[in-house]
Image (cartoon, rainbow, N blue to C red):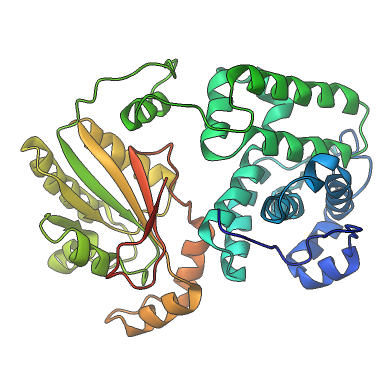
Length: 385
């Protein structure tokens, strides 16, 4: 992982937390001060108070201080952002009970958007986002239908030791009667991760295909070495407008047929907004033609959400295709320049909405995932997960 420093992360020798400057600098924290919490679980007060206590607990832990500066920054940023969506998700029920349903999933997207606009690189954004996504898992993982799979998932996209650390400080940063019991559950999570051999590393799948099938099926054996019966490959592109998808395809997939939603819209005279049902159906019919003949091809669209990608991947793999997701990203300033140069400029408001719902592809989704992060797309520089 590249070196990374999240601004205002406390540093040695004293690891002082300048909370006033942090709140003044990161204005996205300020709404947390006006967000109440259920006193049964958060008697310390509003969400901003809780966030400060979590950060204080984190930087006081010897385990955090022993990490490298990049790892310290990632965990500190996750602690700052872990409840960022609570103001939007909090509801006071008719009986007076305070709830914040869905704040974790919503918070991951909000945090990723904030970090994108700060210029944080994709690998660090995703490391922070995954910690937020799974930070509460150690408290409740044994209640999952398949606790082992939940932990293997964490080990594949993040690190169990980091997740346990964030979970611990989340609990230490609150006032609740069951604090000791929850800390015991987190310790059990650590011990089980050590038993599985994934406390500080990922699960060693036998192959890419074995890993893919494990995450696609229920009750699968993570140690099973699956026979690879794939017969062709689909390059599934993903990325915001202006990231260079067309250029990358021209430079690296020139011999493959391309299914482009933009091209289909032009042929059908369809708008880029509104109902896309006819466009998608036409694209899928083209894909089925290639799949039946075992012809590899490229699917070119933004494909920003994991849910949308999963529907396409299910279609492709039903025909025994290997799926390689190619995610393209350039810095915000370059993306804006490219978008302005397009024949059909995408309004900035639309781009902003896309950023807020973007889910960066992860290795649990496909046979392979590449992040193309180089602005010069004539050179094939990628991070392969």
